[in-house]
Length: 123
Image (tube, rainbow, N blue to C red; front, side):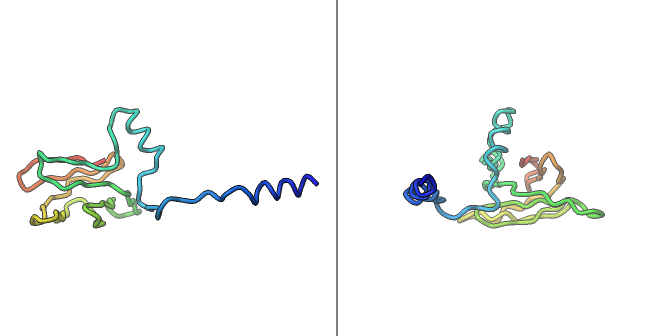
């Protein structure tokens, strides 16, 4: 009798549905909470009007034995791979791409130098 009640209860409970597709590159919620608690701000991306850069989100870090580390960036819906010493052209809607030089890729984030010589950090 108890099994039937349990089955009836489970059958009447709606399954948990996810809202929309899941972004595999999204920053996990616990990581975002920790960054905000540590005073580093939201780690979802950088928005810098002062440096004339589009919004940049660091989505991953690739560390391969014997090779320089690389970072996965998302800029306006485009995924880019950034390595130290590389020049990237960051897409900007309605504007020409923004050229940046990748100075450093580490566990602390990414350092970029703009064409004007300003340095930006992405974490």
